Image 1 (cartoon, helix red, strand yellow):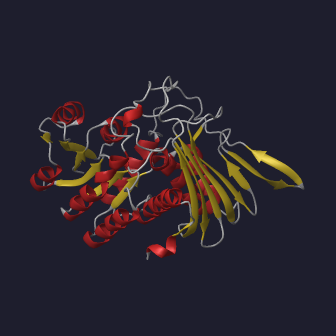
Image 2: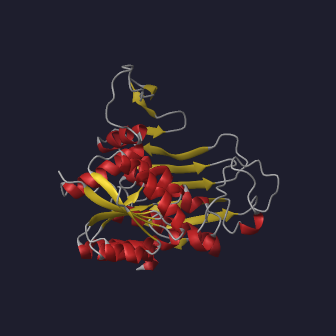
Image 3: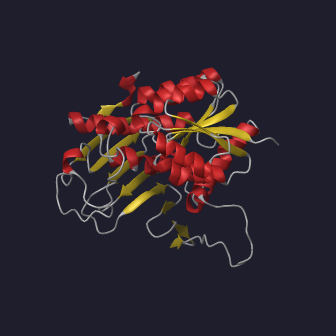
Length: 363
């Protein structure tokens, strides 16, 4: 089969750390075009990951206009530009894998979804935490009804001192927020996916910037610049779904917590529960006794066997292109990611107003 031609828009950290390595391991695709507002970054990425004749662009619109043979693009830019780059790419006849979060606002995310429906092109969002071994196992348990009706959950993404000090992570205009929209989005996506519940009713939220102005921070990536720190350092939300289920959302880059957790979920159903606090743990009652199961995700011990990659980013990449090649349904659907953005925005709006935020008022 002829390889699908791919373009990458945004050649910074997430492209080089996740998307491009995964693309290089996918035998069904080749990256033929690279775009970044800093030309040197696009040139370096093309040299490392591109075909011999790979083209380099500084303007994504030129890439879309000059590359008719490209089947798909990866949007790996700051959050502010996710929506208009994705919509322009869909309108240009490209399938799109956009990095998380889907967009800064629900209105932007909804417009992206509507563009995918209108153009008939596939749009997926980069929530690779779904593809971890523990996540896939737990999803199967949920689908099999082993937890029953899941009515309470926690979405946790708590760092102690891990503020990203590069790029535009600290810039509210470019990103739309701090840890809530950056890493809280992974935990919330994971939780809603497990619950298969995408109908929020209302939420309450608070956000804090208690540590962003500090010096001598103990940050694992070095001290941040307080003058550039324009986002929250932690945020917390409580979401009520239309069916009465509730979700607690916790996110931080900097928080005085001795036991940080990132991109995990805790689920409580009427038949059993699950958490990722010490590996994946399932709890239920058996023979009138409390039982906890710890599934093992060790691969085995055959040193010479080289099977398919189990890296979450590779599985995400393979699933996206399988959906394109074989016209399958997407694993991570834009209408799901749209609700994640909707809830995150609701938490931010509640935090700003100090009042509950009701989602039905958006209509």
